[in-house]
Image 1 (cartoon, rainbow, N blue to C red):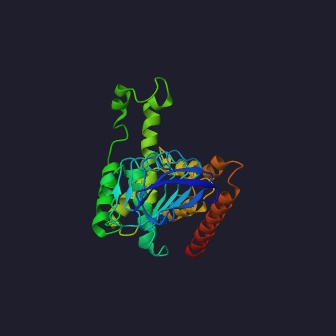
Image 2: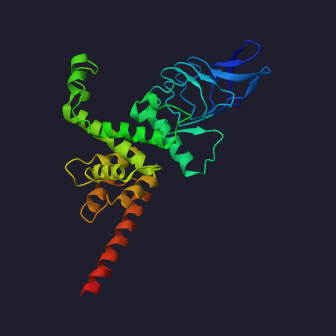
Image 3: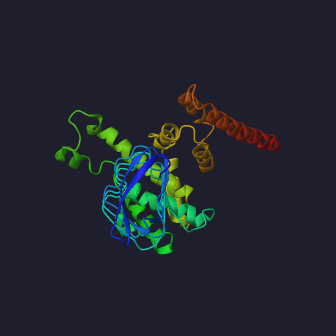
Length: 296
């Protein structure tokens, strides 16, 4: 490979990727090695790779074994064939940045394709719903209904749910901030905010009732509300990504009342994002003035 080496084994009829060493950030697994089609990504083949951001698997791939890409801390995009495939356990375990699992044969400009890629990745990273990790049905009306049903269940969970069990099981170090109920509940609200934003930004097949549910949740946690996780996620996790500020303004999450406190939160950083919000606020204010003038 350009900056590394793929290890493999073959039985004379098919090849299996068994490991990788190197510094490639983008990697394309070849369809044929030693005159054999590559049919399997072996157990722990890319385990804990710290460099890999994108990987493409060939159409011949028929199996991904246990923990093949687990703990790949920077992995964001996977391109693979959406066909029946044997999937092992934990193949994307703790791949916290994973955003897209793309169909290698689909039109990547089509909204259904783009949105399905994000929603399929979220099955592993947001929903913890392995039963929805199904390439053949992904993007279908039935699959989307199941995805939204799982999201609805997560949104309706009490923020404190699971806290007592965590303490009893000793899942966190004694005295750590994770043992604080307020902190625990804030993290649960952030999870709901991320989930709501994801689905609204990739809204293929989203029914109106669920759209309203996600929007209402986000608007109840913008700057100036009792809890402000919507604003905190945008500022702290997507600090200079314009898409999220545009989303926030389109949602109606920037108002005359909370604009100035938001500017104060941003301080001397995120200059371009501040400029965007100032322009938006100025346009909204001028529009209000114009209507007031007509009223007079």
